[in-house]
Length: 303
Image (cartoon, rainbow, N blue to C red; front, side, top):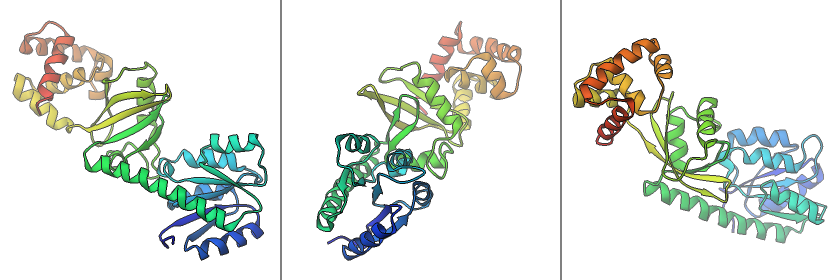
C-alpha cells in the first residue's frame, strides 16, 4: 500500500481525465496535486517537490514533451520519475517522451491497476537512487555531474546544501550566472580527470575536481570545501614572512590569475601587482610566478 507521504503531480488539460485520476490515486493513498498546463506544473515544482509526475503528452501552449524538458532542468527533480500519459502509442511519440526525460508511458484510456503498479515500480527505483546519493553524502563523497556546457545535472543532497550556503546556486537550485560562466569556460578547454577548479566570487571557497567524463556528455566531479581566503592569506604570511597585501597577491597567483585579473580583484593597478610580485619572488627565493604558485599551493595544501 502506498504511503500518504507520496505526492503525485498530475499535469493534464482535460478535467474529465483529472477527476478520474484523482479518484484512482486517492484510493491508492496518494496526495494529488493538479496542473492544467505545463507552465502551472513548472510553477508548482518551484515550491513543492512531488514524488512522481503524471504528464499528458498532448496539451495546448506547451506540450508534455517540452514541459518534461523544462521540469528536468530543475536539479531538484532529477530523481523524480515522470510518466507520460498519451492516446498515441506510435514509436515516434514514445521515443520523444523518453528522450525528453520520461521514464515510462501509459496509453489512454488509462487502466487504473496498471497505472498504480507502474507508479509503484518507478517510486521504488527513485528511492534506491535517492538512498544511494544520501549514502555518498554520509561517506563524505560530495559528488555532482555537469553537462559539457557547465549546467548542473544532479548532485548529492549535501552538495546542493553546500552550494546554496556558499552562494553558488539560487533558491530554485539553479547555478548563478557567475558560477555557470566559470564552469562553462573551464569545461570548454576539455580538462582531464584530476584537474581542479577553484570557484571564485562566492561566500565560501569551493574546489571542483574532475573524476571522469561519462559517455562524452557528463562530467562527474567531487566538490571539496576550501578554506576561507582570510585563512589562506594568514597561512601564506606566516610561512613566507610576506605582508598582508603580498599574501593576497600570492594567493591569487596560486589560483592562476593574471596580473590584470589580480588588479581587478584587489582593486590595484597591474603595475602595483608587479611590484608586489618582485618582493614576493625575493622572499620566496624564486625567479618566476610558476615557482611562486607552486610554493604557495604546497603551503596551502597543509592548511
